[in-house]
Image (tube, rainbow, N blue to C red; front, side):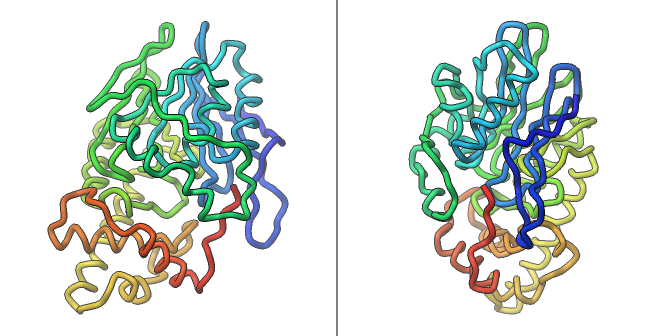
Amino acid sequence: MTGALPCAAAHDELGAAPAPVRLEEIADGVFAYVQPEGGWCVSNAGVLVGKDLTAVIDTTATESRARALSTAIGTVSVAPVGLVVNTHFHGDHTFGNAIVGNGRAVVVAHERLRDEAAAAGLGLTGLWPAVDWGDVTVTLPHLTYRDGLTLHLGERSFELIHPGPAHTTNDTLVWLPRERVLFAGDILMPGCTPFVLMGSIEGSLRTLDRLRDLAPRTVVGGHGPVAGPEVIEETAAYLRWVREAAARGREAGLTPLQTAWEAAPGPYGHWLDAERLVGNLHRAYAELAGEPLGSPLDVVGVFGELVEFNGGKLPACYA
């Protein structure tokens, strides 16, 4: 089943007609909930349909989008949502937990997510105050794991894998080995610029090596369209380009922001949210300086530089 759902939409900066959200059946009883165009806070979700319960992977950013996701789930499953998996702590993947789970689902995530989500709270809503966030809350996981966890939904088994620092320090990959379907969270975002400010360049590259070994047939990223395994190499090539630009800039005595101006637009300027280059360069500089992978950086300060790089404008968010 592939269906266009009119209940939520994304817009481009030119005011084009809304692109419909799509619920795509990518394997028997496995659905990708894709929200075009996939930019800041316009995130994807996954739906795994079982006989007795439904599992959902990520829950979108706003009340209206979470309710739209719930409506979409009801078109493919009569089983209640009993399990919610969060791929990382960012609010555009977690703010809908209570709505989609109807306050009854067990929320599962990596153990680091619990503290990170509690510390972040609803701070994301203050970054884009014009967005109609609605009545969203922070719902922390009820069940956490450290390295990996296998879950069973009737006859379907799926694995939760923590790869180490990548997009964040608390990422979860959801792997369906029989179907060879990977829900990658924001470690992979087809057509969108990666963002590792709160994670790691080197850790992401190691994770991508691991994903090549998994050899998925179908990849659902945290943002962007459903893709194949080619997105793994595309993402790796971008991260290597960032690392090389950082090495040149650091050797020349440039700041990460100055290096971004020197490097842009580069071969990836056509990807959505290219301004993330600034944050990625800050992470690359930290790793070149010997900082531990995933060590905290000044996210607020870096985001200010990202705005400066973006012509003094807050990046567009159509959540």
